[in-house]
Image 1: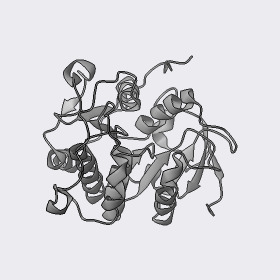
Image 2: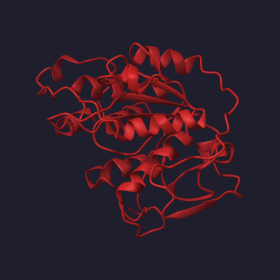
Image 3: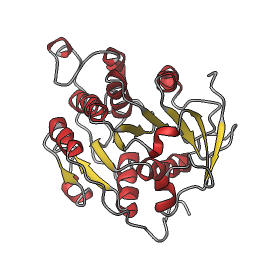
Image 4: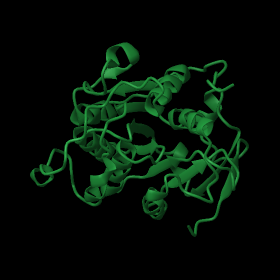
Length: 267
């Protein structure tokens, strides 16, 4: 991609205030695109499974749309499935997006979302990473980046978690540019994905746990995944994307809770 890789350090006026307020976050990161809005525009992380059922994909898309309509930037890890849907939803309403990568910014992970990453940049958003150019996306770096997603956000919405038998990204291209806020008739022929099964090691759940430790509000939908009441007892349940929009419309920032020491699971 043509955008230059730049560095932002703690001393910069562009450095995200939440990275200073919340412990365990980097004092330097790398970025492409425009990061000037990170301190001026509120952000919400909209995350979910890569292999979610179509209902969750549509909920993620609608959630991204509503976040943009209420003046929130959308943050996530650029994964296929729910993450992609949320980003496309936000972009469809002229919103700004932040994609946090687990590698150097000389590449896009997953590669299938390279064009989406380019669209994010062209529409005033940014890609960020705490890793220098050339860094490979190791498994533990995906966990590390989860704390950046929550660390940038006012709230984290877990649309869905788990792993299904059938990949949902096979129909994701149909979402691009369509004004989806409710389940449309023309999508009734999409193949059903298998029900998501509980995965305590999912990236969505790790992001939610980091959010809890950072004092960031965690939200979820009733059908987030099997056993959600036990796995996400600290999350506030919202009925649907319209309830999410109402939450954003009435959102009042609270005092940032400072977590004394972020304990990453791989340290």
